[in-house]
Structures are given as C-alpha cells and as structure tokens.
Image 1 (tube, rainbow, N blue to C red):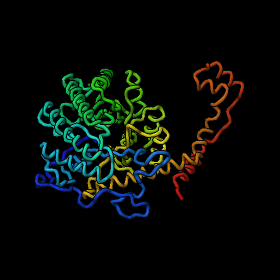
Image 2 (cartoon, helix red, strand yellow):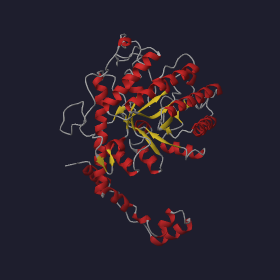
Image 3 (spheres, rainbow, N blue to C red):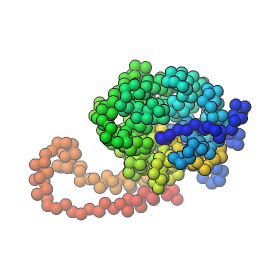
Image 4 (tube, rainbow, N blue to C red):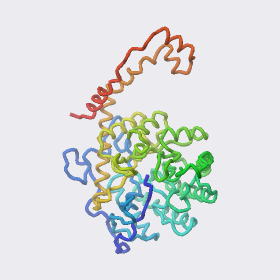
Length: 460
C-alpha cells in the first residue's frame, strides 16, 4: 500500500466544477481482441469468461482497482515536494463533498469501462477527512451511501475497505501501537466507522495495514506493549465484526519497513506467528503485497506461497517494485513468469475468493495521459491472464510437480513417515543414522527445474 497519499491539489484543472459527461470519452468498454491485436486499449490475453481448469478467467483473477493511487494519487514520490504531475479534469483539488462525489462518478465509469467487478478504498480516499474526527466519520457515511447507489447501478462490488491510520498527524507515532491512549482510541473509533461502512457496502474483506505500526528508535519504544496493544485492536475488530453481523474476511497486510524503520507485520511468517500468539489465527488471513515482500528481502512470490501453504492467503495486492529503488514503488506487474507462479499458487488453493487480485499500483509520475490509466491496468491484467494459462499448462503437464514430489519421496515410508507425523524420537533417529552411514549426495537440479518451468511458460 501507498506510504503517503496526497490529493491532487493546486495543479488540477480549476474548471472541474463545470465538469460533466464522460471522463474517458476516448474509449467504451475494453474488449478482448486476442493475441494478434495491437490496440493498446484492448485485451490480448484476458478473456473474462473463458474457462480455465473449471473456472472463468474473471473468477480466478477477481481483479480490483484501488481508489487511492488511481483517483487520489498525483504522481508523487519522495522527491516531488508536493508538486503533482497527474492533473485530472474532474478534480478541483478541494475537500468538498461535491468534488468527492464527482470522483466517485469518474471511478465507476473507469471500473465499468475497464470491466473489473471490484474496487477497494481507505476511508479518507473516498471521503473528505474534514476538520475533526466526527466530520470525517460523517463524510465517510455520506460518501459510502453515494458509492452504494453506484454499486447498485453498475454491479461493481467492494472487494475490501480499510482505515488510513498513518497519514493524519494524530497517528505520527502509530495507530494501534501509539504510546498515547487517546490516539489509540481515535484509531479504534476510525476502524469501527470504516468497518460499518464496508459492511454497508457488502465488502468481501476488511484489511489492516500498519503504516506506522512499528518503530524508528528502540530507545523510546516499549515493543512488547505496542504489539500487545495492536493485538488488542485486532481482537476488538474481530469481536465487532461478530457484533454487527458482518461476513467479510479480516486480513492483515505484511510490510517490513517504510515509513518506519521496522514494522511489526514484517512478512507473512511474522504475521502468522503474531496471530497465533494472540489467539487470532482462525480469525484473520494475510493480504500479501509482493512489493512489500521484496522490501523484506524475499523473492516476489515468497509470501504468497508461504501464506497459501499454511492456508492463510486471503488476498493479493498484485503490484511489483523496482529492486534498484529503495522504496515501495507500487508498479503494475508486467513479468509473465512471476504472474505464472502467483496464478499457479491460486489454482492450487482453488481460488482467492473472497479475496482477489487488487491493483495496488500507480502509473509512473511521467505517465500523464488519461489513457495511461487504462493501458497500465490492461497490460497487467493481460500479464496475469498469461500467467493463468501458463500455470494451468504446467499443472496439466505435471512434470514440475512430480519432480518436487519425487524429491521428497524418502519421507513417505518407515521412520521418515513417523517423523513427519510427529510420532518419533531423537533416539530412533540416532539409531537410524548410525545404522545407515553417510547419506548419498543428491543433486537439487535447480537448473533443470528452471528449464521445465520455462518450458511450461511456452505455448508453442
């Protein structure tokens, strides 16, 4: 998720209040034209209703557009010093309800023309924050009432909502981990209000991302207390979900750092350990953002696979980063092989529902045309569609999976099977090791596995 969200102020066209009609008149609904098409405003690989391994492409992918980057981002980065490059003719830069409603109109035009069925928001993305907590809460209800009308008109649904507990100065020391209880209470109240609004919209999930839930110095930090308090917030959220009768899935999104030096939800394994330690393991799953995974020093797909193998993969913020840049760049994935690994994982767990593939991505600061908004999403949707086709081919071929299975075959019988079933002792292993001598050297054949994977990605 974006570390910092800056509305388009100052450089937006001041004629926005007179804006009416289509925001994107250069296109109607994006169509599938097939792999030979050279039309940048058409799908070449994503064919929504095509059946792959028993499900339609759209059901495997469950694509969603994020509200913050797509409709609130101005092309900012850590060096832009408040100077956005992405001017939008519908946005007058104000914090008025009128301007917020105009953005909602434009957003739903974008969703329907792109052909996605889901979207996501933070509370202050979709609603003006106002001058007080009370005003912020009231504005969110006004705006989600309006969004509900649009959902009914278009059939577009809320994949998930969440609370921004990191931008307002009251949260400079954290939300759920703030050393000041007053600030913590504001964060808890904000979560309650956002959960109410997500429930009203029929949201499928509700996400917790700790933008400032961490530390910059251990000298002024009581780590145990902060983690305890974060667990208390999540516990209250779990209980409130039951209280209001919501059926959305609760998710925690890992990130290792930025803006803090260290965040407590460092990676998938850290989050799973945290949830188990506080009795929340059965109440939450992980929302994995691969750009965060690579910031943690892991491969792109690491947290997705780890969370899935333990039954904890709930949803994916399907972006990528640039390993040569030191921050969370939130780019659209265009790497077919990474998409293949992601989609193979999704197939193997029989889908992401009620989660999805959410484009927590932003066009580059230099990509200033309105068409770029569509092109970026189309390109990445096609990339994941290619990944889905490749993943299905690899699974159907069976070679790669059989190679992995055979590599661990020694664990299937005898003492090894007892060890795997937690039904053995160190004494038994001691006797086995002495009786059987040195194990033979067995090649891991990494290069062969890579060759087989590459062959599976080739549709010739």
